[in-house]
Amino acid sequence: MKLLFRQRIFSWLDSYDIYDEDNRVVFRVEGKLSIGHCLYIYDCNHEHIGTIKEEVFRLLPKFRMYVNDQYIGEIYKELTFFKPKYHVECNGWRIQGNVWEWDYDVLDNHQIIATISKELFHLSDTYILDIKNDQDALYVLMIVLAIDAEKCSRNN
Image (cartoon, rainbow, N blue to C red):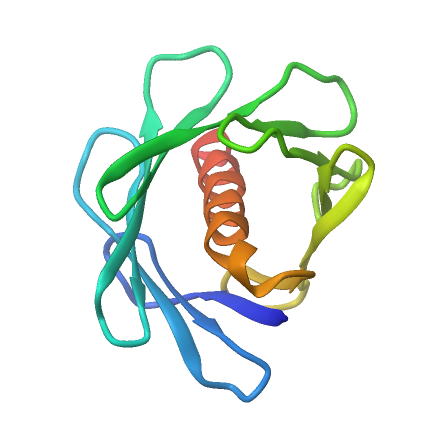
């Protein structure tokens, strides 16, 4: 499954549309006013299916993950010097990025679950998500949201 993750340009809070290969919106993400990033994920039927919330006042970024308002785990950044790394607590996945922080691999042990690539030369943040199993789409989307929010916080 391939998804196109695109941030909306004209929005007060973080908001994103996620498209499938047929250019249909499969997820929408809306930012909520809060201290730290708080992003609500909706399916194509406008049903709330997940939330990701940034924990503030931390040395390294950490995000809490919720599916249908039930806490499932955390995504946190590891201390590294050149290539960014994240860990997903609920399923043991690791995320490894390149030096430029444009491309990421989502790994379970040494098996690739998904690849995430930032598209350059766009007015807004745009990523291509190549996900091996469709049932992992929500988790991979939460990972991209955490990475993008962490970059945004660091750049402000």
